[in-house]
Length: 70
Image (cartoon, rainbow, N blue to C red; front, side, top):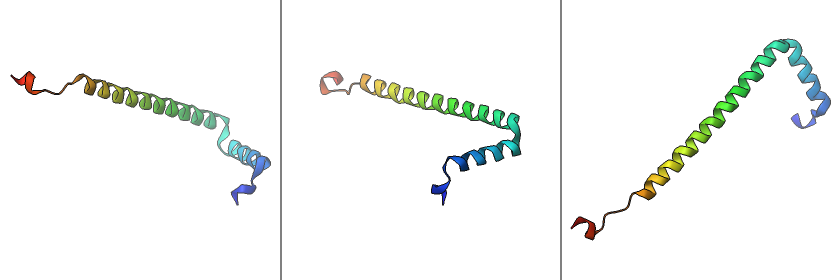
């Protein structure tokens, strides 16, 4: 059913949404979506940094051997 929408159908839907919600409401909504995407990317980068730091700390720790204990 959704395979038959096409470009004219999408344009019609966009116009109806614009008429119902108004330009200002859609603009503010898109701003919030942009902030959400930015926050998501920042969170992903922080998570990757934490994983990298944890793996670096794990490499720095060397296991004790029998020689070290004596």
